[in-house]
Every structure is written in C-alpha cells, then in structure tokens.
Image 1 (cartoon, one colour):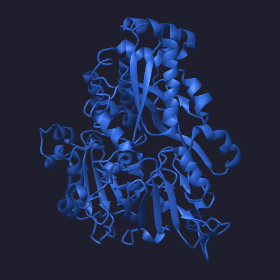
Image 2: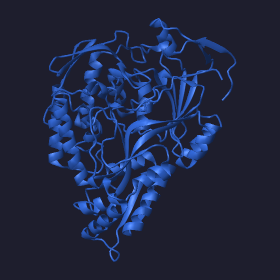
Image 3: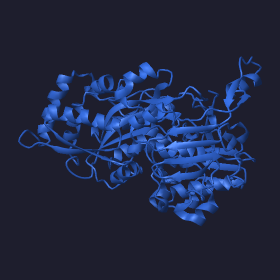
Image 4: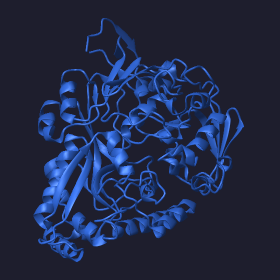
Length: 537
C-alpha cells in the first residue's frame, strides 16, 4: 500500500464522545489522507440479497450495504439504527419503532416503515425460499405464513405512518431487539427488487441504505464498496472505500497480510500460531466469540438415519481436549453441549460422559459401534465434507485419525468451494459435514432454533416434534427462569438424539494492522466498516 501524502487531524469517536460528556480528551488522532480499507473475507459471498444469503462472508458485506432497525456499536452493544427510538408495551407484545426522517436509500429515496413491511413479508413468503425465514418466528403469524396456511399480509407488522412501524409478537421475546441486527431483517429497496428480480443485489442494481454502496464485484478477486453519501450518519463515516477479498486459504491470506495487501485478515492458519504469537503479537486479535464448530450428520439416509448408537459412538471417541489444546492452541473450549458458555441468562447442558476418562468413553463407544452393526469384519466407511480451508482440512484429518484408531472407521475427506458446499448440504448430498453456527443474537434460542425441523439451515434434517414443541413453548414463556428451563429441556433432547457432533466453541481470530482504528473485540465478532478508519502510518 502506498504511503499517505498528507495528514488529516481529527478526533476518534471515543475522544469525541469524551468531549461531549465533559471528560478530558488526552490526544487527537492523525488520520491517513487515503481512507481505504482492505479486508479478507474468507469465501466468495453466496449472495448479497440479505433475505436469501447465508454465511459470515455475505453477512460481513451486508452490514456495510444495509441497515436494520437496530444496529451495534463497536463493542457489540445494541444502538439505534434506522429506528431512532422505540417503545415496548407492558405485556411485551407490541413494539413501536420511530424511524429517522433523514434515513435514505443510496439513490436518495427516503427509507420508510413501508419498506420494512415489504421486506419482512418478502423474507417469510414461501416463494422467496429464505433459509432465515424462521428468524422472524417471534413476529405474529410468521410460522403460519411459512407453512402456507396464512397470507403474508397477516404478518404482525404494519406501517402506522411513513416513520412509525408497529410490530406485534406472538409472545414476549426478550432477545427481539438483538435479533433485529441480523442481516435477514434488513430492508430491501422495493422498486429495485420489482424491476430486477433476483438480480437486484448486483453491481449497478443494488440500492442499499447502509453506510456504503456496491461498486465492483469481480468473482474470486474482490468486492469494492464506496461511501454512501446519502447515509443518514455519513458525516461520521471515515472510510471512503472498502475492498473485500475472498481468500479461502488462510496461509495465502497471511502472505498477503504480511505483504501489506490486506489490513484486516478474516482468519489465521492454526499451523502458524506459534510464529504469529512471536512475530505479530500486536496484530493478533483473539477474543471470546458466541459460536460453535460442529460436524453434522445427514439423518435422511444411511448410515446415520435411525442409528443413534452409531452417531453417539463417533462423537464419544473424539478427544476434544487434544483438538483444542494441541491443534488449535488459541483458547477454544471443548464442546460437550450445543449452546456456548457466556450466552446471556443460560446455564450449559452437557453430555454426562464429559466427566468420564477417555479410556471409558472409548470402551463404551466400541460397544455402541458393534451394537450399531459395525466391527472389524464390517467396517464403516464414511465421508467428511467441508468447505475449502486449510484449518477445516486439518481438523478433519485429526478427527478421521481418531475414528480410525479407536473404531477402525475408514474416512474419505472431500472439500468443496463455499457455494458448492452449501448446495451439497441443502441437497443432502452428504454423510458427515463440517459446519459452524454463530449467534444471530445473544440468546440460547439462536442456537436452539437452528435444529428446529423447519429451519432453513437445518442441514442435518433433524426432526423431533417434542424438541420443536419445547421451542414453541419457550417462545411464549414470559418468565425468564421458566423459559431457560424449557430451552435446557430441549437441549437435553437434542444431545440425546445426536444429530450433530459438537466439537469446540469458537474464539474469534483476526490479524489487524496497528494503523486500523476503531476496531474492538466483541463476542458477536461484528465489525462494521463505518466504525473503522485508517490512522497515519
């Protein structure tokens, strides 16, 4: 990257806030004249349509292109987005949002309550085929609309005026405001969708309401965003341009980071952690993260359909401590349950055999494996499918070796590019597949709902009516303690059914150049470009 030719002196956001609260401001920042950020972004985004895409790579960019009713501060706290304020009825069922009168789309059109009514009806409409339609389940009539038993017009959302939006819930939902930071709840520009159809989220067509606009998209090269001058808070946006690079190989990303081509790396190669800790200690950012790394079983066909004992055996012989302490070495926590630690108002549920020594786990697993119909004379051959990544490959190799050593399992590894991988999972062309789930909001339900039978990202095909019923009951429960109990009951059922193999709970791991300002670690690992800037260097 070229060096700046001049300096611009200004105040950091924190410093400016300090002035407003009469706290002394110790120093002013010096900003680089060229405010351009280069970000690694993992895989090629599946789509930039917030109602049809899935995965972190798409969501990262969508946070810059769109804005929902609620947004987040750099530390992850909830703050007003398009909605400047809101009120909640005493029974917790009615939310009245007041929208900013100066909120505009990137073409200058005003953002109104009608845009949210249109957009939310779009995501729950069966014809849209959204994987995240279930996200709006707390809103009145969502589930009936998804099933096709009610019309989209019955959704519990209406525009009282251009700048007042009323949302009616089916039951008190304490995490509802946090849910509204998820990209699936973002508004889309109605005229653009009606004109361009599925192509509305392309270069030249996409009209967003976020801090940036889409300027270029060269597949397998980069996506370029530029500042949206119509954004209501444009005066506090520092960056002029943001480049996102789809780099699936973490070692390649590290090379580009060291060469100065990237300012913020999305991931780091676990094989290089000792070197990174020694040589790039100031750049390395490792922090708690509400997410789980897991393997999913395809429950729709053999060998895992109706074979709980086989699923349990494979899970029990994985030494999660070896994975986290010897392979990953970055603070990840072994996962013996589904909901991560540190989730608000929740106490973890875990497998009973977590407390067993590894020797006992292996002994019981061998017995279950034989009862499931497999032995040395009839070995199991299974495929682990994962999206292309040096880290995913390494973890798959280690797990395969554990299965081979303890159960004699023959494992085939199969990697695919991100979009192809997602399609394979949806089509159930899998046996065992690598996956991860990141909290959409800080609540246990964000993890529980993933394995609801009707959830669009339930790629295991898990279907347990008792589990679904407990989730539905928890969604209507206003008492926080009773609600927690219902979700814990549901998690116990989930763990007993073994539809997935929890492996470890995430830590976020990034490389951030010292001259990137405004970056703060947070448990959601959300880093909006509008909060970032380039310091003189």
